[in-house]
Amino acid sequence: MTHEEVKTYFKEIVSQLWPKWELNNAQILEWAKSLKGFDYSAIRRATQEHYTTKEGQYGKPKLPEIIEKARVYQPRSKPADKPAEDDYEPDVFIQCVEHETKPSYVCWYQAVYVEKRHRDEHDYVVQAGVELCKRFEACYGGQWIVVQHTSQSEMDKQFLEHRGIDISKLLRNIKDPVEYCSSILAGT
Image (cartoon, rainbow, N blue to C red):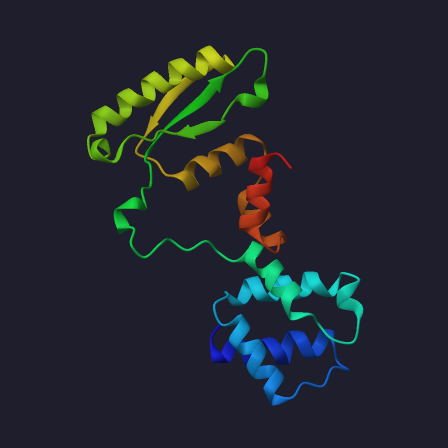
């Protein structure tokens, strides 16, 4: 968290949740040091969750418990020694287009991943997709096809629309669209 985020955190979150807790400068400094490596949203979410627990209902928040919860919500960072080319965005997918016994499988999809050395060979990736279709048909049944030159977000959009979910309306009515869409895709 940045210095400004720490100030905002104490002003808008901590002082609102625990209004009777009077902080001194030494406490603020200790908290700031402890929270320095965390993302603001992870700390905010962890603090709000901590407040709803029995321990959070006492006169002041418990820093170790907030940090423990924040570790769960902290965005995963990529190791600095990993090169940028590991951020592979697939553009070839397989998708179920027909299933006689399990119609809920229709529009399910899977990205086609290949070894790094073959990623630039589009024909190789497509052929890997064809082979993956055969395996999915043998395992899950139904008819699977290769979908080329698209993105993960386009496949998500197609999947949601197939299930009758109006994405534009959905995004206006929910607080956290990414989390909501992820829960739909996970089936929860």
